[in-house]
Length: 424
Image (cartoon, rainbow, N blue to C red; front, side, top):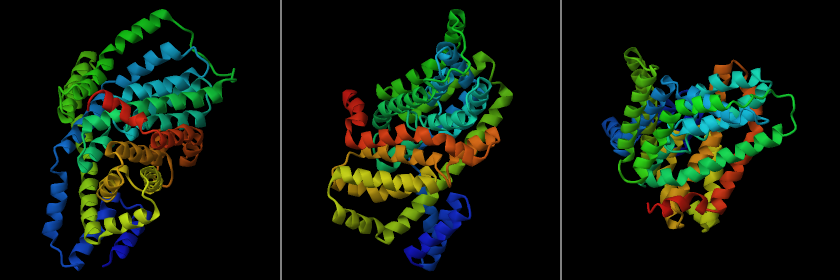
């Protein structure tokens, strides 16, 4: 069974909407059998791909986000942002972005953000007179801040697969995430600057003070998690564990997390983790088969015959990730392509940290793009609206994301300046 037939089989299964782990796993196991390879070896390859200390942070960061949702942290951030920005024209648009930015320090998942925040924010925006399409598009685009801003689950997976520092990759992602928020705010201003029909929330100093007090606890979470990683107090895995403990403590203090909620939290964490790890294992097996077929060498030869310029290489990688992101899960894509792209990046002297930020941002844009577009489907399910309506709402907000992607490639210091200043 040739590599070409293997790829065709995978594409056929994906087009039939077979879950991506099984779409990878079935043809890969068939290839192993037809080529006389041991299925025991396939099992060992998959299990060894998961035996990584950096990957241990994944279930902990997932649990951190689940606990934050159950603890009602999003609602507290929303109330504070509304009290602060509600009086501004288009204020709920800025509130939407601010809540996503604040919650991203605890979530790490665009899908989790879209599900948790969509239910809170979009009904409020529609009630205040904002177009439904505007609310859907903004919420979907703002949710992409979470997998860019630390703690980012895709960043943990990239660091583990590429063998780079998770802390350094986290630091490199902070400024791009802030620029994402700034770019989305600019789009909100452009769309809403002349709209006088939108309801505004009167400014109330007492309301601002009371909501500020309620958000003090959650505001310490990024200080503990990211501060601990960047100062060297914790490894990312240890920081995730400390973050979970802190978030559970907040939930207990706020009386929003009770003992009976713990099984639900654990089940949600285990379910999500199992899905991610199955994808990682299946993609690792497929990557092994690709290596046997010398696919990385063939791709390297093709790219080097086209260019030996690192910037052009980053542009090609970004375009590839934008395409793959529309049809494949980000985790599967990262695990599959990193072993192929990393050696070539070293040959062309492309910084692996910059490569990681570019790859992750490109893949996250795919979450807003059909046919996969996971965030689109989540918002569609939560708000009971057609997927097409959600996608049309996201189109204006794609612009700053694509501009940021170009900026990262042209000006690498946007990502690399902070890790250098921190001595990472």
